[in-house]
Image 1: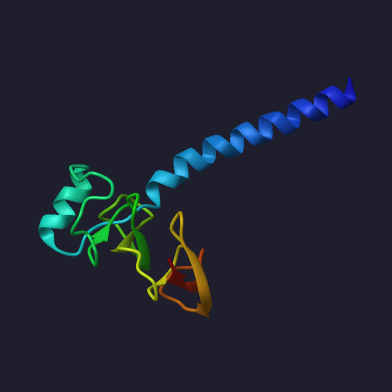
Image 2: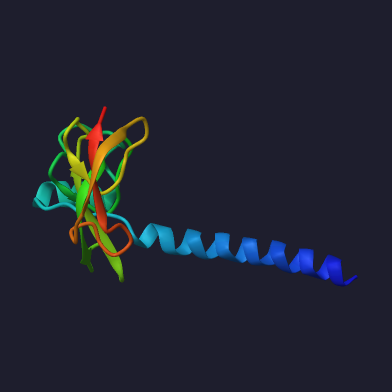
Length: 124
């Protein structure tokens, strides 16, 4: 019975952590720098991977983009961040490695926030 209780406790812990991550994750997403882009991103009217977002700020990072800076903001919800979006290209220093890319160099930085103290030079 004790072993069964331990297994149940582990399962409940995993489920609780998953629920907490679902609550926290949406609040740590990006916002835009220019007013038109910011309005589109905040209203959710831009499709993931939409062209022309390079260099803009967003409450989330859409598929097909990476980011090279992050900053706290109240625009995206309380205790949230906005990200400067970048289209991945070889040689770009990025805070996150997009799917399908690799990197050839790493450097320490403060612009990626406390969760990612490094930038990676993309190699595609």
